[in-house]
Image 1 (tube, one colour):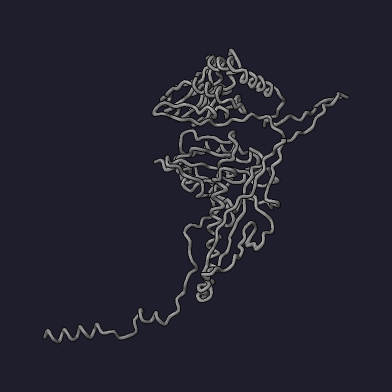
Image 2 (tube, rainbow, N blue to C red):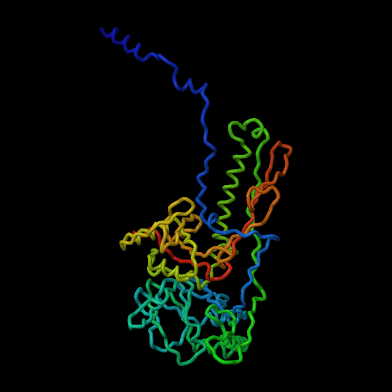
Length: 468
């Protein structure tokens, strides 16, 4: 009986038709084009208007500005002791352009270090203002009194910021605001008496301070530009003011940057393996995609022309607490209030903003852009860009810009009519075949970006992501 059962089982296992493994040897395989995980949406390249630049250089002419600037200061530390780098004191408006390193070192050595706990007051409204304060580490709030007596946050200051250099020039000055630590802080303080002692010993610093006081007296508009004298609301025949519009004598020039590579393809591959897809075409397509990714990265991060490094320091603000809140986004909108075009943020920063909105029961709307629905705040689209860095401390930045030359905004730059051009600003030039039968193509893209006026670009910095 057992032998009969065994024969029946063998019959059931016997193959009765052609198997798929063998059949595939005669079949045609449908293939996809080569895929590449590194390709992103590249919203910045899509939305940024690009100007045609002939000659490889773009000059941004502006009205003459007397604005002395508000630079950020860098520090060094030995253990727990923090010191300001002497040359970095030139970032203070009062010392901008002063190059006597010996005097700067004397000033740097007179700063006193203070450690503050969260909630501790550094300066108090109404008390005598007799020092300049540098924020070496941490975040503080400048708190003032509103119209109806309520307390309001005037400004948020963080690493590298400073305040009240003006008190070094005046006597009997009183704090118009209170400064309170939001997080544990390290602050360097220079007393007015210490500053005046250094000035008394340095004729060069005395002359520089006097020239600075003269600069402050020049007529300026609210943007710090040389004023244009006008008359309005008059009657009769008064003598009208004479005026002219002065220009910067050394305007900034943007030279086109380059990203390029040499694509190598063996002639045997190009000749014999071109069906159903052209090998040269696919190799070139993926190389171009990689160059475009690098182009967007440079437009964001390049230290010469990248947007993260070219925003005016007055256009940089900090979050009030950590994660990006609706209040922070409104504050950013206030820095670029004239026809803002779009926000640009890392996807994780966008998610952090969405979490804060959810926590408050706010549901931002979406808008359509290029056939895609993207989140928006106050009707301004928030588009993702994975080229904006996320630091080890899990912070990032959110950019807001006004785009276009007619709007005096942010513009991209690329050259006109390149030889062997594949698209504007990008070309592939055949370099020949070497003795190993390898063909070479030089693939190049030329580009840059320019901020036409300072208020065209604002940045919300120190944006925390991933907070529970």
